[in-house]
Length: 190
Image 1 (cartoon, rainbow, N blue to C red):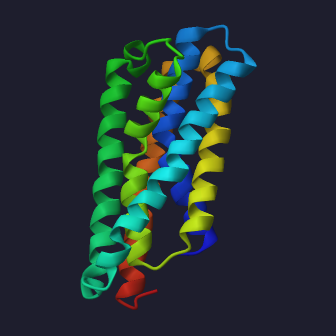
Image 2: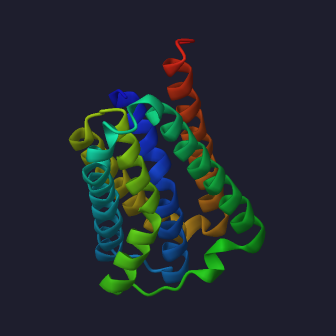
């Protein structure tokens, strides 16, 4: 898994967090620099920490399941991507931002950050199976998420509901495409 794939995964992983930042910005309406920084830092930290945790916990399992690790990676990415698309479609029709509160308490932001970074934990497991560079990936995931969430807070004041679900759907499609690429490489077709 090269840097380009890691960047695509980082963008895909950040879409949940970005959507919540857009919604928070929509709920707050008067976003200040500290609001955008708080969202960016909390979500970025979680998106960097969770893949490291997934990588470390599954690194020992990699040797045991080496023969099927590409299939596991494919399945995980397919499920994560499909779930992101399904959730985005539901949010699009339900007015997702209406369900997000305007609270910016650190514990609320951290709880949201952990919930939206569980898929990053799974990506960390996938990276362990593929023996990918987790440090570069985790830093990239964290920085991309920070930047998108920082911007999402400001964007939310302007567009709210209209943008978050579409970004999440695009992220789900990217994860599925990366999973297909992994399987095609494993089978020697590309």
